[in-house]
Every structure is written in C-alpha cells, then in structure tokens.
Image 1 (cartoon, rainbow, N blue to C red):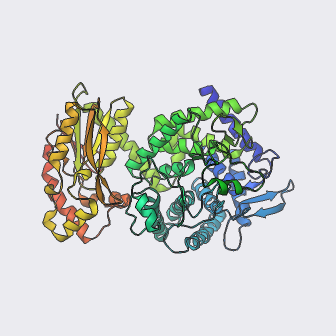
Image 2: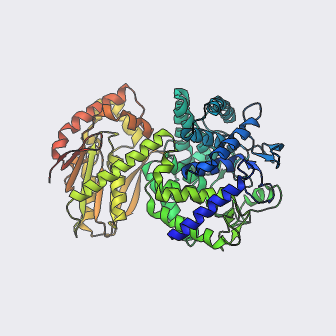
Image 3: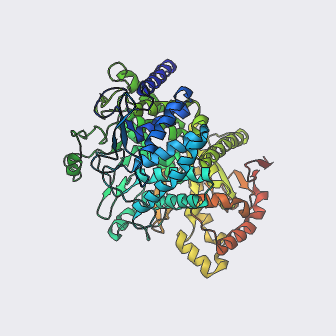
Length: 620
C-alpha cells in the first residue's frame, strides 16, 4: 500500500502542476467542457491541499489564483464562480454562476485566502483580504433575509449545482462558519467571533437536533416530525418552509466533524453512519448524497430538470450517489481529526484502490459510479487530486493539516492529544479487565472534562477490542432538562443529589455486571422535546462500563473512580464552547452549590485530575 500511496501522491501533484501551467490553478489541465478555467471552489480546495502538503513550488501560483479571483469580484464583493483566462493571460470571461449565482465561491475564496496567509506572509494581499472579508460577511447577512443566523439560498447555488438542495442549505452555513472563525482569529474581531458562535448554535439547532425547536425556522408541522429525529436515521441537507431534502450529505458531514460542531454523541452517530454506509456499498466509498433520488421519488422531477448541458444525475451518478474523491478526502481528514482512525483508514484504502484501478484510463477522475465503481466524469481533476492529497496527509501527518485550521481547532486537536495520553496513563494503572465487568466512574464539576474523557476512554477501549458501555448521569435526572431548570428556579433547595435517580443508575450497572440478559432498557433525555424517552441497549459480553456525571462518585457499583477537582470558575470556557449553558447569576449560583456538594468526593476517588488533565492523586 505504501508504494501505491507514493505513486498516487506523485500523480496527484502532477495533475495539479499540469493545471497550473498557465500561472493560475485551473480545474483541470485537460481541454474538457469548461474545466480549463479558474474555478473559485476548485482552486480553494486545491490551495488547501497545496498548503497541507507543503508544495512550496505552487505557492506563487496559489497566490496568483486568489488575487485573480478577487480582482474580478463584483461591486458587492461577491467572488466569481469561475474566470476564463487565455494563453496570453487575458481575461476572456467572468461568470458568477450559470442558472443561479454560486453562493459558496466567496466563502471558499476567503477560507483559502486566510489559510494561505497563515502560512505565507504577504502584507499587501493580507490588507486586501481583510477588507474584502467584511464585504463577503455583509453579503451573508443580506442572504439571511430575516436576521435569524441561517442564509436562505437558491437551488444550484453551490458545488452540488445540479442537485436539489435549496433554502437553508447546511453545506453553505458550514463554509460561512469556517470563514467567520478564520477571519475573527486573524482580525482579532469580537463581533465576528460572536457571529460565528450564533451561526454554530443555529446549525446545532436546525440540523443536529441538539437544541429545542421552539424558536426555530421550521414551521410547526415540520417541528412535530423533526422532534423524533436523530442523526443515526435522519439527516437534513437543506430545508425550506415547504419541504426538506432528507439526504445524507458527505461533504457536510466532513465539515461538521472537521469543525467540531456536533456533540460527542452526534459525532459517534455520524461516524457510525459513515461506517454503515461504507459497508452497505461494499467498501467502495461514501456517496456525495444518499440515499439516491430514484425516478419514483417526488424529488426526481426537480432533479431531472436541473442541468445546464446534459442530465448527469441518474441514480448512482454525479451528485445523486456518485462517489467523489474530493468529498471522501475531506471525510478521511475529518475522521482522523476526530480520532475515528479505523474508519478513516478503511475509507482511505478504498480511495487508493479505486484511484489506482482508474489511474491508467481516467486518472483522478471526477467521481465513481455507486453500483459498479466505474470511473466517471472529468479525469485529471484538481478537485480529486486535492481530496486525495488531503486524505493522505491526514493519514501520516495530521499536525500539518491541523496547522491550517482555525486556532480553536488547533487547541482542540492538542487537547485531544492530551486526552489520548491521559487515557493511556489510565489504562496502564487500571485493574486488568477479566471475566468480570469493570465499572469506572468519572465525576467532577460541569465543564471539567468528564464527558470528553469518557468518550476518549470508550474509543481507546473499543480499539483494543474491549466492548464498552457508556452511561450518562444526565439521563437519570428525575425531570427533563428544561423542567428541572424551572424546578431549580422555583426552589433553590431542589438542587442536589435528590434530583438524580442514582439508585436506578446503580441498578442498571448491576444488571450489566450480572450479564443475565442481552439487553436492558435505560432512560435517555431528549433535549429537543424536553422529555424522557426509553432506549434499549445491547449489553451482551460487555467488559467495561463507563459512567460519567457530577455525582457518580456516590455510586456503589464502580470499582475504579476518577474525579476532576477543577473548580467551576476554571471551566467557564469549556461550558461556553459546549453552547448548552448560558452564563448568568443563577447558573453561577447553581454551579457554586454543586461545587460545594462534590468537594468532599475527591477523597472517594482512585484517580484525581486537575483542569490541566494532570494526575494529582493516585490510589490503588
């Protein structure tokens, strides 16, 4: 596989160098359709790959391309979809889109420009980019129309220009968020940072089902149905007042994971969907959008009408189920960033195999047909070569990719590395996992790192082949979240151990340890609907139970207890990043009371950690 990887890497670089022969990055070096032009989106993705792979010989071409696109922007600041340049370097044509404008071009240009400036110093260009950023963000504000944080966009307005997504399109919201984070960091602009925060919250509410829908942009009839959704079974690529495009979107999933927007639970769900889909389609790769829109489906008429030259979106083709190396490359990168390295490697190996087979006839082809795996579309495409380079770099040197991301993601990546090191230290001192089920509790203040450590430990144990069950104290509160908060506001004395059914949690752990049944039913709080639901979990052959929550040190079943001694004042930043708790005087009082309640629990722990993830105390 190493020889294949080296050959494909060299081939990918050759494709990009050929497309750069005129001093700008063209979509392809071949004379096919309109691909021998400077496309904003294709160029931006290629520049990210150039920077991640440190292809210094192409840095000047990257800069020339970004500057050309900016020079051709319209009076409002919108970056063109594509620019046609002749052999003499003269501009022959500037296009802002075919049937409709391309809303993603401006965001991709800004992402690539700001990322380029993280690596290369160019004072004059930096000044222009920084000024232009505000024009692009003003456009985005206008595209909201109602000032409610999500842009409302036309069909055919982004990379899936012959697909049916329209209205509030997830992919475009994610690009805007990425651009906002990069600009806020470079300009040290609090207003841009605040805007990024509210855009992220809107994404979590409308697409990830992590916040109540009461004040959402969904009509009441849609809210009633969506309240039952979870990402394992449902994914909304776009919605409007009258419809939803309920199709999984590979590139949006990659961006969600790479930008660390979903909760830990939802990251696991999305990774699970990728794994199941990969298996479903015989390990060929992940489709651009799936399930495919079939001729019998109501959306097929809109799909079959939406094309410029010829209809490409038959089931299993193009955006309608085609397997695109660029989207799969971003998925591999995102999965590696999240620590989902097993599925990332499987997907990367599938990319390598498909590209190697197609190398002789259609090198770095646009996409692969879903059912046969046949290479289709334009060959020698920078899009595909760049997707492969991003994936290959993330497989061997994720730090190189990480350095190009917004600062908060660099911190996240470093923190993940610290959690991995901490997990290794914990596993080294844990009593040997044997025939009896090992139970580990993780307790501490809100925002201290309990949940993150629990997921990290679960991931490490499962990679070792140890079946692990993770339980959350939050699911065992007597009242759902909003109702419990109201009860606290009504009676401050409500706060404490009696809010939680610790005895039920203890009993469920005991049942897992006994292994007398293959499943048990546990509570699961639905934060969107503010109700308690029931969930059946598979406990057969479980070897480890992880249970996390503020008061879990009081449980009788755990054999090994971990405690974070971080004070609630030290955890403000992590709570804010979670986006679930709104800081106010009442919340401060709640956290202060909880802190007092658990301060004595440190003495119950086998392992005590501080807010720097350092071991303070270890007791066997």
